[in-house]
Length: 327
Image (tube, rainbow, N blue to C red):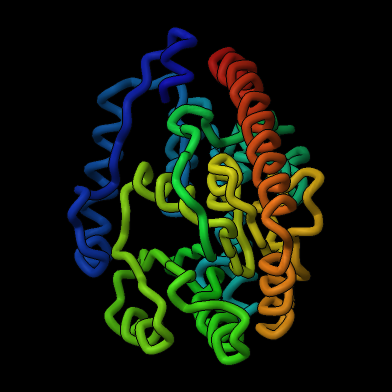
């Protein structure tokens, strides 16, 4: 929104639900909230409508009916979210591809999303013709400061959704601790699920889990670790490893899509997508065996790379926001 405002656009946000709405209430009251959102959108008499989530994608039909420009901001391949069952994913993908017919422009959050987007949605469609495609890489240099704190051990974040692979973290650290490859006190996680069962399970290993943190606190927390571990099966934005690199923390990452968009020359920190807990544990133990001088060199290099990436991202967003404003 801020970038478009800098281009002279008047931008306003329409929320589908009040912030505190519980999921079951949102589902039951969906017809009311939908009508309310449509009234709010039309009352503002926009020239363009931007949808940012699969729940808002049907509003591209409203834009089509009202002859408005419509933009879909692609933050992930969201048809994967709904289930691990392939048939359900195919049904969800069909829903997305149908509604993509009514979108004028696709805006991609990184190169992975741009390159992996279904080709059928990029070409001439039934209702809109050939859509515009704009790369708008996410991430910001602001807020990253040089850390003078001592570093030790490994950090990780437990997040919601089957694609985030929460159970594998426990398996990996169980193996590392059982083999005496790491001191459990040198491992620390953030539990974004705020789950008592997760806390109890990791506590039994001697690993402390923090409750959910604000983004600024997460950056400071990452700066206290030598390694950041990301074991997601799939990521769209995949920003946590990039945020870790900005703090000079080495990311160890499964090749999960979005995260690879930021890793640049550091292929040695990528692991095969179907790596076993034993393979991940062995990789961690190998990196931890490095001399302090080697770890320090890599921490400096990953931070330099991350800052260069984010500087490029900012320049690219400036160009992209101008292109969006001109639609």
